Length: 365
Ligand code: PEP
Ligand code: MN
Image (cartoon, rainbow, N blue to C red; front, top):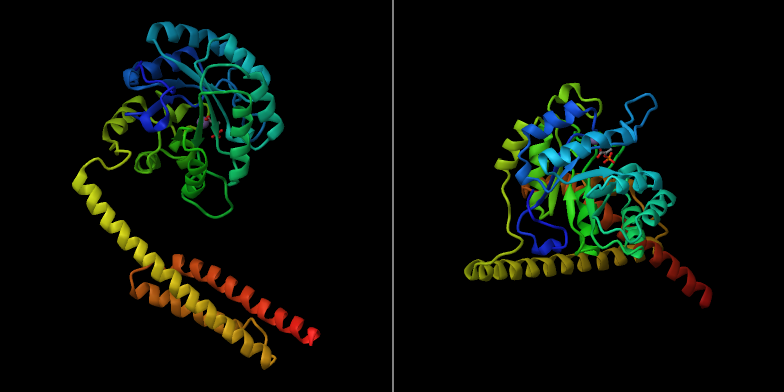
């Protein structure tokens, strides 16, 4: 095991935190065979679910406390630090009794503030790292709220795990990343390390490499990846676990990025590009200001002539022509349509207030 520890704040880490191991601890043989194939010296923790929150009853729900006998043995044979998910105060008590080195809160738990509070209370004063997975649904507030409950209870080694979100939109992922939500989380809690769980995000082996690299490109502090010596026969999440051999290949292929630029000449170049970006942004804002003042004018006009604010044919024409202009400028038409939805909404808002202020001034006359 490496000596890396979470005492170092994310910005001081030189290497990503790596957690690997099976979705669930199934048997001593399964645990040992998996560990034998893993590059343990490169791992900070070995993961393994003991209590599995399953969507439907009747699925494999984990081996429970009995698994600790094998884990204890594995700790002494392989010299590993073991991490597991806790979902109740009782799990916390059993995990601590068995000297677990790190715990995480699962996505199905983060959605429930009562559960989170119960776990935070059970972990009060405990020194091991506690990681909080994002909630199942794309709601930043629930994730933040869960973190705050642990902060309030004095948990010092806190971390976050981004495992993607359920959505009703068709998606190639089991859980859509919505990277923006994790970025917002990071902006609000810059000192809390954020790691990515590409296994639950992707839901299939083929996506794990690209998701892991994407997370490192976005300056994540580590990865948690499910591995199993015989993934196809795993009792849970069989589609998304890597063999230890494939995990090793993946780890070697990942490109680590610097946190920031060090080289003086690159920093100068960067400053020049940033100034150009600032200038381009000013121009965008000036163009929006011009557009919105024209909108105000047309609002007056519609009001005077007693014409409705919303003209569906004009709106359709705007969407159509702007996405064609976007294409000719090599811009993503869907991005531009989305942008115009916002601009149009604001335009309608402005015209509505033009209509209302007219009314107000009439009654004042
Ligand atoms: C897990 O890590 O095995 C797990 C159940 O994950 P999640 O809470 O992200 O679904
Ligand atoms: Mn799993």
